[in-house]
Amino acid sequence: MRRFVLLAFGPLLVLLSACASGKAPQASPTAKPLVNVDLPSELLGLHVTPESVQGNVKGIDQTYLQSIGLFSFREKSKLLRATLEIGVFNKLAPATKADFRSTIIGGLGGSVPIQLRMGQTSVYLATGADQNLFTWFDDKAFYVLSMRSDFPFQRTLLRDLVNTRIVR
Image: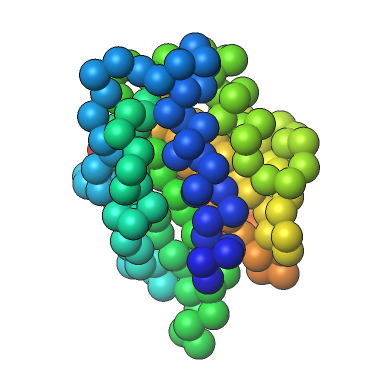
């Protein structure tokens, strides 16, 4: 599971510490565990479980994130089908700027991301080793949904998550 989860998560934290301006934000607090999240305990027959990310944020003192979270989506057999990474921006993040978002999107996956539309939301698809990475933004946060490429309901899971107000 570690390889599957950290493909996007590890580089993303480092990227967010200096993207957009080329230097680390000033007086930015360390990212804390995510709170105020509305996710069901089950979605499309997959059990949704929060995962610990504390070990992944140690040593990262300055970031554009105020909180981060990671959720696993598993079948009853415990097979990991997807993960959802959530980063909530702090006040210093230029979260609505296109170049800031492009920097985040460009740092994910092993391919050049392509832009898709889910209703009014732009979603960016990049591919990795046997997985697809879908990234999108709202006014408070960004989301990275990593799914195994053999999961048959990728678009349905993505649509359900994009259409849900996850961060309160």
